[in-house]
Length: 151
Image 1 (tube, one colour):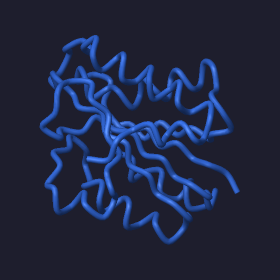
Image 2 (cartoon, rainbow, N blue to C red; image 1 turned 180 degrees about the vertical axis):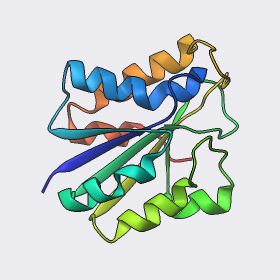
Image 3 (tube, rainbow, N blue to C red; image 1 turned 90 degrees about the vertical axis):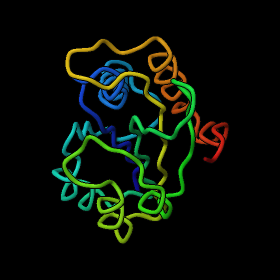
Image 4 (tube, rainbow, N blue to C red; image 1 turned 60 degrees about the vertical axis):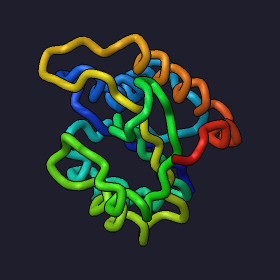
């Protein structure tokens, strides 16, 4: 069974491009044995592909407004996403996507990166770029995901 990394976000909206940047980094220089999917701003379009893969573990990475300092990274319990009213720029709420995929994977992990600026044509901030690099480095060793604190 494979481990799947679903990167979510819109690269044209400043810090919301954290997920697509991570996907690009993984395509250029793979880390670990992850199957990387760039879900963009419509990750629901990838539900079928992910279901076919039947991953052992699904890691979803997205810029997520958690009320923290820009670039902070947190593990978020997928069960809490709907209750927390996490702001999203995506077509479908991520809690719905997670519900759709939970039955096809053993473990769903949601990793949020706190954005600073989310707006069309803004560049990604340095804090979020550093956070993406930190997440990228953690993918080489499955145990390194534990370094991130829960929200």
